[in-house]
Image (tube, rainbow, N blue to C red; front, side, top):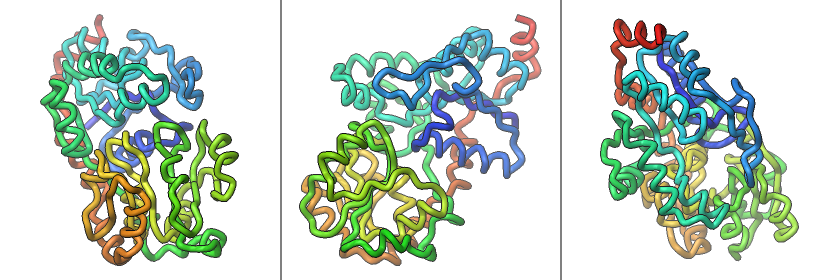
Length: 345
């Protein structure tokens, strides 16, 4: 198939949405599909207010539509709710092309955390954006239920995977992290207010707290918590070695839809401590993690989990299965008729 994926999140951004799209694209291409990515780097863009790492693209409907027409996709997927996907949405609706969307991010909660805006106002936009989609892809049953509660019921499951060639229990631990006083409690991800990292850094469990990642809150948190080791971003084998050196992975977010880093940590044999919220409640079980409103208690319980059980569980998440679910949710276009009409318009 020729598959067009339109997204407002793409490299050089580093987040779960980008990593998911990159991994699924690679798997689709490995299977022989052709994939077009329409992303902000193809257009003039400006930094997003309060979140400069995100670029807001000035993407016109005509420019995005021409890219799609030239590619002549057999299916179109809109991955995010930003300006590039808005342009693609207008073009698809104008030509009566079916498309799918995805709900990757608890966008109303993120906007509320960063700006104080009432999340109910943002949900109005979310409902409007996704309502025309033939299906909305969601990573967990909890997110599907959240969407249904807001009137969006045409939801299909799209899980996540782990690069098992990179993240496994056979990876040698990072020697510098491993030499720190234990137990080593690790966070990996964006260092930003919506990730609720301060809740982790304020816990009192003995040992060393390590943060891998970068973001707008890093400077303030480094100053407030001088005992914490902030190591900056890591990728690939370096990231896997950081996971392998940890005794517990702490996931303090209350707003993530899944939490890709959790299954990467599990694949490396590291148990997870988290709050009992969307994401962790769908990903974890009692054998591989602990969830509690008292994060100190969750850490204490998670430290007792069997690492081999964690690794075995983490190996169950593959990008091959994720790509298969993505493909099954796509809605084919009648390209023999509709693309001729679109290209002539």
